[in-house]
Image (cartoon, rainbow, N blue to C red; front, side, top):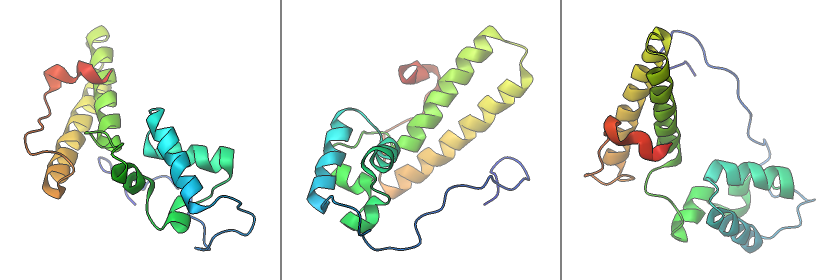
Amino acid sequence: MARMHSRKRGQSGSNKPIVKTKPSWLRYKANEIELLIVKLAKEGRTSSQIGIYLRDVYGIPYVRTLLKKRITEVMSSKGLLKEVPEDLNNLLKKYVHLQKHLEKNKHDMPGKRGLQLTDSKIKRLVKYYKKSGKLSQDWKFDPSQMSVYS
């Protein structure tokens, strides 16, 4: 997939497992995996952190093939999802980090451009999440109050 703000191609990423069946060496059952997800979510981990942790520590390659639902679906059914989706939250943190950097380095023009691009990504994502119902209609992106996400 191409990059959003440049005319370059994207970097290669990881591939999902080809076989969509439960591996024979996996000893965990679906309800055990669900309990692990709930435990890790209560510790404050995000869905992507939970997936990486399950892969690296417990050897669970792909939760969706075992549970027939995503990690975020498990978290939402248990009421453990946060108000702001994970990718939007990461962009908000990046925005705050860039703002702090620009306060110290006022003449950093590439940094200023990065802040503008991040701002436009946030606005686009908020528009999408409001339309799809993942964010409430009264949620508003206010750059002056973004220090909450630092």
